[in-house]
Amino acid sequence: MPDDGDAVRSFGESHPTPVALARARGLSRELLIGPIACAEALVLAVACWAAGEWVETAPDEAWRHLAASVLAPLLFGIAAAAGGSYQLDRLERRPASVGMAVGAWLLAAVVLLGIGTIWDGGLTLTPAWIVLWFAGGVAVLVPYRLALAAWLQPAAAPRWRRTRVAVVGTTTQAQSLLGWLGHGEAARRYQVVGVVGDGPFAGPTPATRLGGIEDLLRDAPALALDAVLVALPPTQAERAGELCQRLRNLPVDVWVVPELAGTAGAGTAGTGAALPAGVPRDLGGRFVVELWGRPLRDWRGVVKRAEDLALALPLLVLALPVMLAAALAIRLDSPGPMLLRQRRYGYACRPFEVLKLRSMHYDPVEVSGTRPAVKGDARITRIGRFLRASSIDELPQLINVLRGEMSLVGPRAHPVTMQVNGVAYEQAVPCYPARHRMRPGITGLAQINGLRGLVDTLEKAERRVDYDLRYVDNWSLGLDLRILWATVLRGFLDDAAF
Image (tube, rainbow, N blue to C red; front, side, top):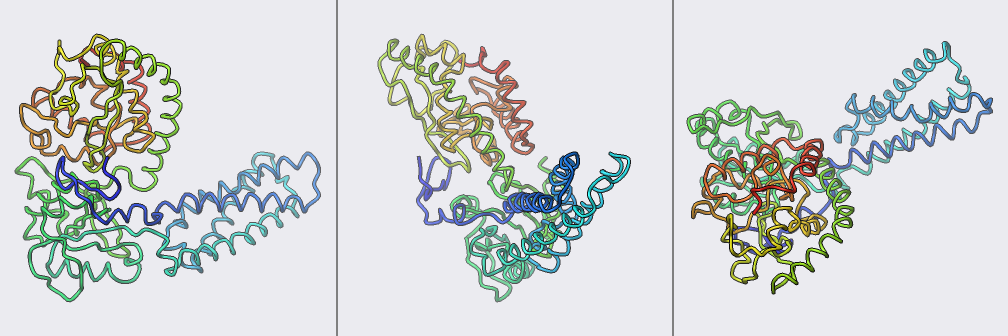
């Protein structure tokens, strides 16, 4: 498997690059919001509890004070989030951050007292406790927010990984955007990796030239890009639309300047590839339109990875006896290794070695998976037929999941040499690379909809890719759980798996 310094230049070809940097350089600023809110709620809960300890109360009132100490931080968090108090640009401004926090705390206190009055038919909380409780909350919120603002100041910027952006275009409009991204709030949030285009620069802003469009499509994974901003003039709307369709294949956010948002789609409508309407995105005070976003950006990626780790480890423990029994049966049935390693496409089209229990007579030439199995294939062993039909041969891929190369649910991991009617899969289906914007999965939306086994026609190939893209574009934790449940009910035994 290529290390972090490798990146795929084209399908099946990788090259070393020194930019294994951005992904591990620092924590994404957007991932801070959850821990900040949780820590603030915890601090408030402790302050509320401590305030209650200073006031002598009757035993029958203690439970009310405890309930208020738990409920108040939750109400505060809801009020703070609804008021935009957890937006990073506001958290960095001391007066705004402190003022919004105190206001949210006051609102939480009013709501809590209202709930207490309605619940008991009158306010039963101790007045002295209420005053001390509210003052204690303010006393911890103010220094917490001041310390947080200092922690997020520009001097601490190297701690946070900025969003890495490539700008497509060399016109005056693109040059203006480069200037904007290089100053003020935008410069703290975004890092311009370089400019893509063949024409001369229209202004003095320095920027690294990344070559042409083909260079960008080839090298985007190596550059660890988070987003590509298309800043072509409206007169090039058709070219911009075609480019955006190709950029969809990359695991990056695709942004366009507002002038292109309503015209780029029209430029591709004749090809049946109209672009989505998109959503506005703030670039530190200047807006662009996001056509496609990374499916697992920020906390979505954390949730997806947590799901994989939480489920794959116990599943591997449960599957271990089955795997050992299958390995013994393989050894007794035919000579050769029990476990095979096969190069397949992973995230961002990076090849990795998938683990499988051997189900065919061993042939070193056939390990690559160039020749797919067909019904009645003589290469499949007796035990192999059962392993493939029951999907037991896939169980070692739980190790790939724990290693971060795969997910439990995702697009199928295809061999790097896979073909459809003698044509490479990525050439037969133009939008094929877009499925690699997520890690491949052991099971997926296509598999539970009957698309397993041999892909011997272009129609089957397109249907599989269509299901894969539907999954990538609409991912949610609920969708994963439904797919896993459907796999348990009907996905293990399938006549199409031979």
